[in-house]
Structure formats: C-alpha cells, structure tokens
Image (cartoon, rainbow, N blue to C red):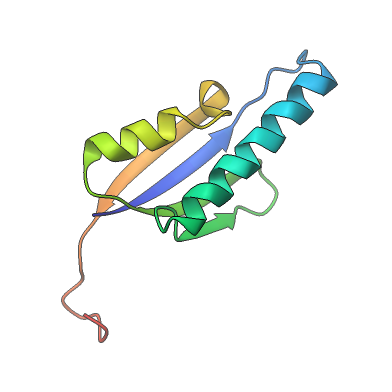
Length: 93
C-alpha cells in the first residue's frame, strides 16, 4: 500500500543545540534504514520549509503508523497522510 505523507517539523525554539543535533542525527539514521528496507522509497524536501513530501510503501495502516510514530522527530511533527491508488491513465500501471 502506498501513502503520500507530508511531514512538517516544528522544533521548539528553546530546544538546546545538543538535543536538537542528536534528534536530527537519529532521524536521519532511521529514515535511511527505512529507505534501504524499501519502506520509504521517496522523500523530497519542500523548498523554504522544514518539511518534506514522502512516499511510503507498507503492508497496512498499522505498519505505517508504527513506522511514523517511531520517528525521533515525531513528537515535533505535524503529519498529513494520504492513501494512494493506481490511476487508470498511468501508462506504467
């Protein structure tokens, strides 16, 4: 099942630099692990924002929820999740 996910990160202004650096490093490692596993095949930065558009390829809603809620930045994110279906005009379908 494919999902389009918009992730907007809102770190608190008073967050100390070491904590911020550690969380961002953990986030990168986890995200790359999911990419290598094929669960997170696409990620694009949204220009001018601390946000991204991503595509996840998972087996269920529950699996997606588990993966997203395990993101180190999850407590600081606003997420918008959209399930995707094949379009009938897609020449690759």
